Image (cartoon, rainbow, N blue to C red; front, side, top):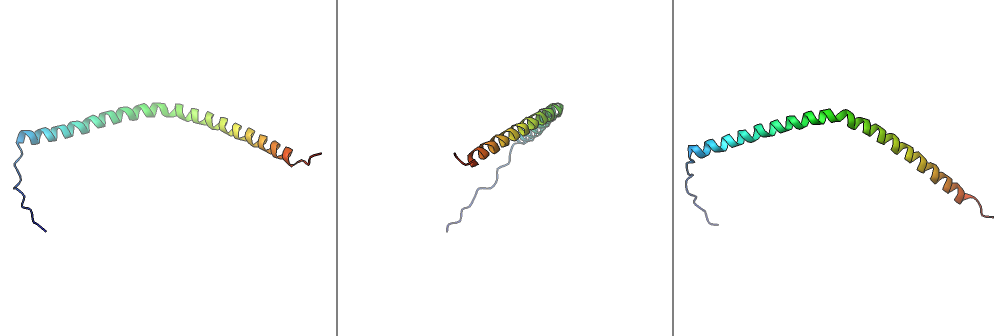
Amino acid sequence: MSTRIFAPPVDVSPLIRFSRWSLLFAGIAYGAFWNSRFTKKEAALKPILEKEKAERDAFLAAQKLKTAEEEKAALEALSQPSK
């Protein structure tokens, strides 16, 4: 097993270091801004979505009941003895 000897670390320019940190904080601020914007938008849509969900759930429950009745009628028709 060979051992590698690495070169000593290079000093990074203060301008590059400042640019990296500035861009990092700018990205965090940008993300926080858009997150708050989308959060407000979703909060405004929440009552509408809840209303639509209630309507959709009622429709699906009615469809399920209708399907169950149709299946019950079909099973009863199949269980009748043939003449």
